[in-house]
Image 1: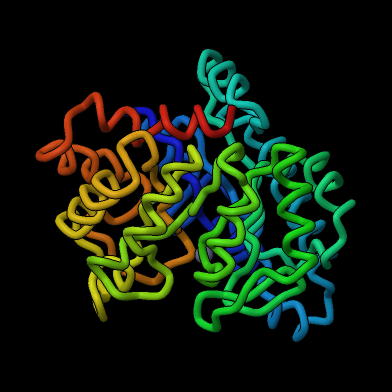
Image 2 (image 1 turned 90 degrees about the horizontal axis):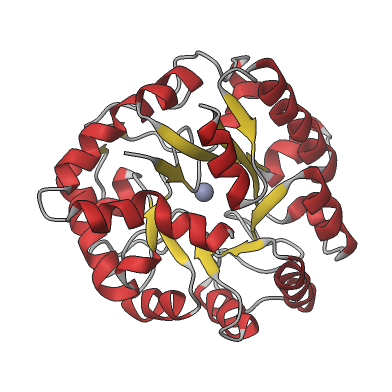
Length: 309
Ligand SMILES: [Zn+2]
């Protein structure tokens, strides 16, 4: 089944592991995605504030370096994958037998609170930006700290909505989440690219039922995260049963039109029952025990295509 995955950290990890996208020993490589019949993969540039500080590279320069990694991988693997900016390009690439790579950014540090950067990032091909990772930045606070969006964060969200760059609230504080929903004004879809249900697992990275309901009302999406610790409190292994439980809950609270997949592959240390991206079809078959193929089609790709359009 065609799948659009909203989040992974693979592009950034390539640099750290001195690996390539075509074939590696990580959760995601192109051979594994092909085996899983993947339609599109969001490839996040994950900007870790402290790594940047330690290596003396500004978050902006780090971001730019990784845009080049994304471009290199798209160029070198043009027989398997092509970048997609619009949802129509995802379908055009598919018609040519190519998977799509969608560029996203995890953590707003490289924006440095400068609204003009949103346009620049959009020109670079960025389609979605996660406002914070686990650190406070110019835009706001993570869910481990709490606190409202900062004035610069509010400005950035407005510009992102205006320019059609998706606002990703995964990692963001609860107060910040509600600020983003308010700023979306019911007109702009809000995305939580990789978060699960807090009612089932009380991790602050997960969303409450009220948040899931509100996210659905924006027309947005919540992407199911495979992190064991977000699925079951204190767990190290992600089971298909736990993913199914969260998926059913997300469908119940956000609505079946507002759920997708946000694997967090290569960003999580958990042991996965289905091993890696090549095993995703096995996971989908398991989900089909309780979810119809019609609904699974929405969750795997139709909802994401709508939100990207
Ligand atoms: Zn993350």
